[in-house]
Image (cartoon, rainbow, N blue to C red; front, side, top):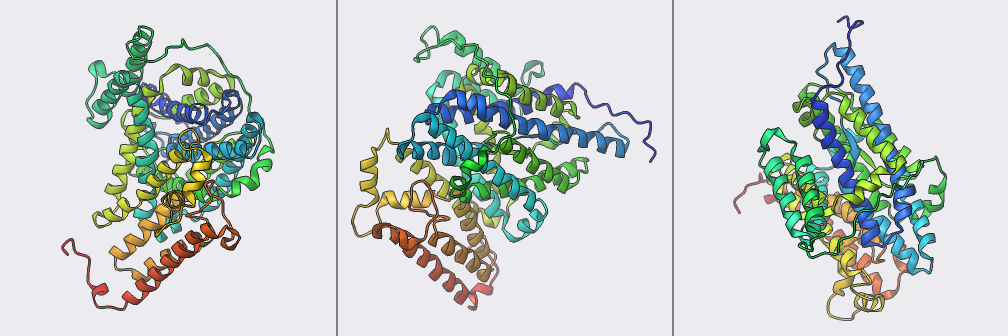
Amino acid sequence: MNTSGFKYKWFVFGDVNGFFGLMFDNITVLSYLAGLLIFVFNFPADIVYGRMIPGTALGVLFGDLIYTYMAFALAKKKGTSNVTAMPLGLDTPSTIGIALTVLGPAFLYLKGKGMNVRDAAMMTWYIGMATMVLIGIIKIVFSFIGGWVQKIVPQAGLLGSLAGVGLGLIGFYPLIDIFGLPIIGLIALGLILYTLVGKIKLPFNFPGVFGAIAIGTILYYILAPLGILGVTYTPPAANFNMGFPLPSLGFVNGFWEALKYLPIAFPFALLTIVGGINVTESAKVAGDDYKTRDILLTEALSTLVAGLFGGVAQTTPYIGQPAYKAMGSRAGYTLITGLFIGLGGILGYISFIVELIPRAVLAPILIFVAFDIIGQAFKACPARHSAAVAFAFFPTLARVLQLKLSNTEIIPTALFDKLMNLPGKTLPEMLVIVALGNGFILTAMLWAAFVAAIIDRQLKKSAVFLLILAAFTFFGIIHSVIPEGSMYLPWTLPTALQRIPYQVGTGYLILALMMIALSFTKGSKEEYSEEL
């Protein structure tokens, strides 16, 4: 096909709708990143807005610019303007997950060691940068072997662990915000459910997400000053926290500390790689044949760039490329979104928007994301694997409980340590909760994988996953007894804490041997049936 004179019509009206959808997705994630760090962990706001967000936003700009270029190249190759760019933005599960399980706990841990607030915040920033650099490197490597990983680990393990994050972190915490301001929160939630879940158009074809945010925000600024919402109202200050992201070796300072959070970071990196493969396949079905490796390498490099420039959240291609295509978007929406988010992080208007819009109004968007993630896990996996998917939820629920119980404002440190070491006929409940919550993503992935293998009558494969669980437990890669989730040599632990690596690891080991033995029985050869 001769396309030498072809001109791509890259911006149409559909790009306006696409921009609002993709932009608000990123704003929502940035809002929760900032809100969790500042309001939950009392992190200094100027470091979040002036150092973390500019680099994070730059990663979005970098990736969206490349995806926009790739759309131009594909349109020219095909000789048609009916090409939609791949949407790239901040990965919701890992951004919230890393805020709650890496950045926040690291900050509290460093303060507990005697660091002053600002030094602890700066070191946490370095740890966040180092985590992104590690994730970027992992993603670059796995972009070449992501398909192999997808074949080895059952979908129930990959998607079930992500669904657990959707339920426990993405869904639960925003629900608290919604009911913290129930009048506007429930109105915004109702509009999101009406438009995105019910798929009913608003009058005059008004964009659903923008409508929910606009109506909720307007109601807040009308009702809050009147005292109707029952909260203390403070007018938003027009503060623009400007911060130009510069390449930095600051991540080197936090590298060794970041390594102990690798059991959390690694599964998040792996999930975006597998998600990127699935997204590229869905785009191909919709008519846009992008090269999988190009898509994966772009998201990997975007994450690496973010980390090197101070970012603390990874980027990923969004699953909704066919949806953006259906609304008529082409390449304009990714270009404008990338510029809006990237420049917003630098010029500071992103921080103003984050402060302006109540989180109770943005929270319903994350509730919808949680619905989508959980639903996708059950729909994409074979129906017989539903139990494996559900089993993957529990480690995340333990992590949520651990985060609440380890908050010193709820349980003082002395009481927490006492509860970790209570004598009794069973292991202390607090110790078990901490152990179940640490390494929760990796635990969920392996739990679902070994259950799915049992269902598929692949008992020896199930035993392999159990042996991995045993080895990881022994060294604290999962089920760490140290609240911060650090790895260790078990014999260096206090005697009371050694019970988890030795006893839980032995339990996994014995179960693996049982699966191998049972693989030779007649019953294990019979096909799976819903009936007992």
